[in-house]
Image (tube, rainbow, N blue to C red; front, side, top):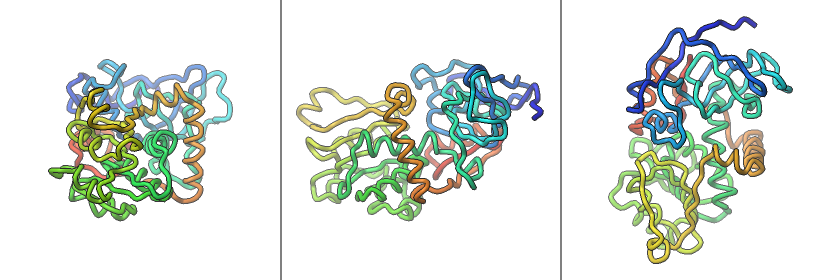
Length: 332
């Protein structure tokens, strides 16, 4: 198939945030190296990682100017040396943590390219390799959720939060979800047992009230800032777990004194990229379980809110302001 020499792409020009994302019209189309595939991007997923990279808070993140976007779906157009099992014409979804997804073409490691499920449009698979595995890893191998337990899920109206609510209910948990008031009906429709105001005055007290004073068995913490302390206070003493996988609301600290005298709980850090690298067996189990949930209909095709590529700065700004619901996609 014909591959052009140049393409349109979004370039991050500073570490001052998404407002310095610029549409460039004549970027060279990359070539796949050994073990890589070139993908004609038909849909790119928007993630909080993109915001962290744009603000320079993502550890080891790219330095500007760089092509933004980590999650892309589309058609394989060329394969590098040594690639087997992925032919041109195959539709895949994958993540390249170094960026390049907010473009008409991107290079992906062949090992990270997952076929789009049969019958799904490319944009419907966004989340399959970022949001959904993150939610599942937090719930199962790290969070050890079990039927009859209570899980507190923050940012439940977002892409990761929505998947977490569906999966937690499937595993038999009672779900307490947080979201801003305008998003409560969306979260209830996913099956959450209780939905509380994410910006309420005393979130921990409300969780304790709903759990008869015991606290949540598991907390999925993606907000940070002042919410982290509320999450710790809302967790069941001794056996409760808090899986921290995001910091949308800013950094927060916890001391050893607090762990001994105030919050006697398990605090677990999750970075899905590090999980893939450091514990590939666990990640493989997560993906196997997740594909089983897809086959069983627990997780179905996504319905992202779509933006044109040139609207990338707007999409990221709305996500950063937590003004969005569900998954966001850019269409090159």
